[in-house]
Length: 395
Image (cartoon, rainbow, N blue to C red; front, side, top):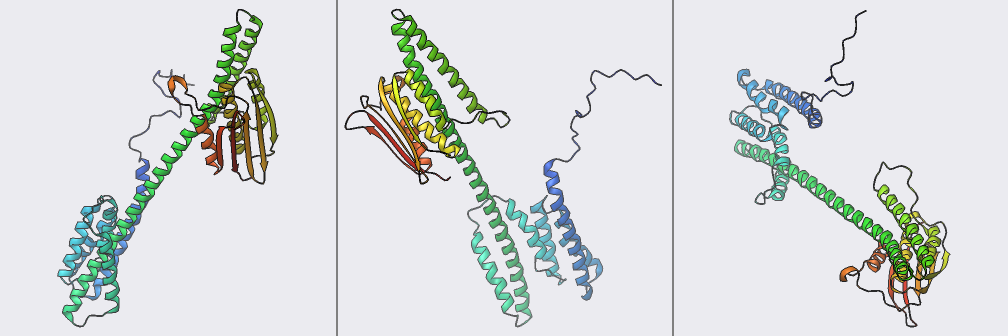
């Protein structure tokens, strides 16, 4: 047995070989099949022209090169569309002049199609008019026969030009259609990205605003009673700790949803989480009377209802604590109704940090409008503030 040679420090393990540059790229693989089709068309059309010219008094030394020049370049029309079209058009015109078997510019029209697809849009080219006139000429040539030799020759030229015009109009129509489809896809993608950004911003606001409001209230309590009632300050710190931990958990969940490969995600909060929301609000001095009459709501609808109640209760904590708050969530006949009112001072549109208005009411309204519902918010005549939302859903 031969002893194995020591492995080179620069050797690559199996499966890690560097990519070879001589291998065809994806674009070449996609182009090979159409080019093969064009090559087959070119060969068959060349044979057709040669067979068709057999019944004419045309020297083979003249017919064969002209037929080859008319048909064989079609094999590479996708690679060099403009030169191929120019060569085929010149060969077809030569066949017409020499009175050889002529194809009514069919090969030139086949070569013109990729030119119309690839050339940039030009405003001065009346593509629609060209298409309409070409259709009229082709239809008229099929219905009206030539009366003499001169009319026959003129009709052949006009019909060939009409075939070219029809090919050009068809290529431009397909190009415009593809451009419109690509533009619509870009707009759809931009809209989806904007909606997703808005959804993420709304979720972040609802998560952070509620928890930070509760933390701010309890931190203020702890500062005021730290010396006189240290036990109460300690309770406030415990609330701050539990609230911050819960907020971090929700943030991890939200970020995990944005990662497709994140396993083991917790479910989104729903109506079953409202009791915990009421308990946290009670820690900040807001007593919540919870009345939930909704079962088996879709997850997205339950999440929207929870976020609306969360933001409304957060506003009570920020602007009305200590206070009492009544929460009603009811689902009847495919429609969700949400009511949140309190007995506070009745003011909600207050400046945020550094005078910047908050986005709580805006976010609630946007959530309701997503489902085509109704939203109202404002002070109550008897005092306090009320939020009402109603929107339909599909079970």
